[in-house]
Image (cartoon, rainbow, N blue to C red; front, top):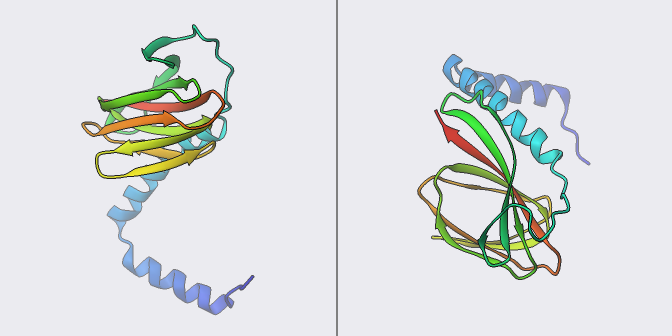
Length: 156
């Protein structure tokens, strides 16, 4: 592994500090503070075992289980609701318009996600986001029960 010399690091740090101003430093700090709980939530997101009747069915083989809610320290949002969307193997959640901004973590299984402008594959531990007003659909491509843990950001 390459380690840069101390003077090089110092010069890079000084150059970076010249381009940052008070407003961008505050914005960076607020963003870091706001996102920190989401990272700790994602790190603790363990796939829970759900029964076939847990939660509410939203599509064949797809159920939503409410996990909990909490207040948000992010100015644009008043609260965060956590839900697990449980997919049986091969189950598909059809294209849906998102009611809120969301941060999604795959806690079990593997999925193909389709958005209006792209398609991608995710596996356990991967994260992605959904924006309010945008479309999204998901298919569990694994042979196990798949789970999306979703932090739904409720506007202020």
